[in-house]
Image 1 (cartoon, each protein chain N blue to C red):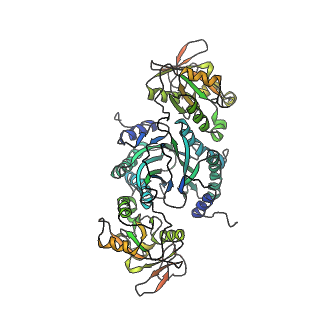
Image 2 (image 1 turned 180 degrees about the vertical axis):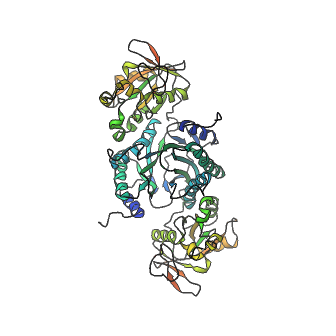
Image 3 (image 1 turned 90 degrees about the horizontal axis):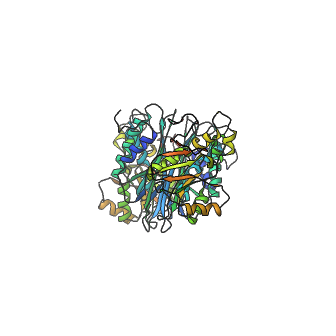
Length: 316
Length: 316
C-alpha cells in the first residue's frame, strides 16, 4: 500500500484534510473539535442538512461513488440556492461499510470536493464511522445571505408569475446524480429582480408548488402548454406521459420562483444567464392549484401531480 | 390515532417544529429550504457534526430512544465545549427504520429537545428519512465564540499543568448515554483563567492527551496517583484495573485542558463550580508521553492506554 494511502479513519481524515484547499474564512478546520469560521459582517447565516442512503437515494452501480458525493453536496447547495444564499462551508459525515470503506470514502470525497471547489465551498469538518451496514452520506452546508434579501417560500402574491429554471421530469434516468445546483442562477436572479418566493424542485413540480402556495396562502394556475419538459421525460417510455413526469418526478433540483409580471418579462426579454427560464403560470388570490389544459379547461392539480383521466385524487 | 400524532415524515416534521420553542436568533427555522440564523456581532462561528449508529454507538435496549437523542446532541455539545464555545442551534438528521419509525423518532427527538432546552440550543432544521436499516442519528451543532478567546488543541506549553473535569473510566456502563456535556464549565473556565489547550475526552484520556501533545508539539508526564477514577471504573470487574479503565475508556466526555501553574492553583484553591477538577500532570518540552508511577518511575503511556506488565506497546 503506498505511504499516502489511508488505512483507517484517522488517516482518512488526514487524507481529506490535505485535499481541502485553505480558505480565509476558516480560522480552524479539520482536526480540532469543531470548525471555527469567520462570519461576514451584515450577513445572516444559512444552514441545511441532507442525508443520502445507499439503496434509497442511490445504488452503486449504476451510480459511481463520485456521483454519490456530488449528489450529497448538490442537494444541500440546491437548498441554499432556494434561499438565494451563497454557500460557504460544508461538514461531511460518512457512515462507511466495513468492506472497502476507505477507498469508497475517498471516491465519495473526491466527488464532494470537486463540486465544492466549483462553488467555492470549503469542507470544514465532519466525522467518519464504519459499520456493517450500507453507505450513508450526511452533509451540512452553511451559507450566508443578506438577511434583507433572503427569498422564502411564503412570499408569493396574487398576480405573480410562476417561473422555473431548466427543464423538468425524468431526473431518475441520470440527472438526479449529476445535476448542477442552481446557485449562480439564484444569486443573479436575486440581484436583477425582486423574487417574491422561491423553492427548489426536489419533491416534484406539483408538490413543491403546493409547498409555496400553502406557505404563502395563495393559489395558482399552471399552463400545461408552458411547462418545460426535459428530453429525459420524453424518453422515459414507461407508460407515463412526459407531462406527468414533468409534474410529478422528484429530484429535478431546478428553481421554482414567483415575481411580478414586469420582472418576469424583463427576465424573458433579457435572459441573465444561459440556463433556460420559463413562465409556467400565475399565482391567484383564490386558493387551490389548477392546471389550464391546452383547450383552456381548468383541472385540479394535486400535490402528487396529475394523471390524465385520474383527476379526482393524487397520482401515486 | 390521536389527531396530533404524526403518521408520516411531513407530519413528523410539523410535530417536531411545534415542540421547538421560538428563539430570537432564528429568523427562519424548520419548514423552509434552509435555516436562517442571525449572527451575533464580533463572534466567530463554530460548527460540529457527529453521527451515532444503532449497533455501533448504542443498542436499544438497553439504551432508550430518549437516551439516544440525549447522547446524539450531547456529543456535539461536548465538541463545542472543548473549544470554549457557546452552542446556539442544532440541525437533526434522522434515518429511521421502517417499523415503528415515527414513534421512535418522537422519543429520540424528545431526548434531543430536552437537552437542547437545558443548554438554550434551538433545533433549527434537519431532515428525516426512512429505510429498511437501523436507526442513524446525525446532528450538526452551530455555536459561537469570541474568535480571540477560542481554545484549541495546539496551545499546550512546557510547564503547563494538565487538568481534567470529573472522574474517568467505565463510561460504557451508563455514563456514555446520560453524561452532561461540560458546556457551562468550559465557559466559566475560559472566563476565569487563560486556557492554553483543551479537548473533550471522547477517545480516552491517553488517546486524547496524545492528540493535544501532537498538535502542540510537546510532551507530558501524568501522575498515576492523581488520575480521578470513577466509581463505574472501579466496579467494572472485567479484569482490567480501574486505572486502565480511566486511561483507556472512551466516551467520558470530560474536559482535558492545560494552563499555567498559577491559573491551575487558582482553580484548585477556589473551585468555580461543583464539578470536580483535578491536576493530573504536567506538559514537558521534551516529546513523549509518560506515566509517573506511585514509586516515581516513568513509564511510556501510549495513545491506546497503559496496561501493567505490557509497557512495550499499546493496549488494545
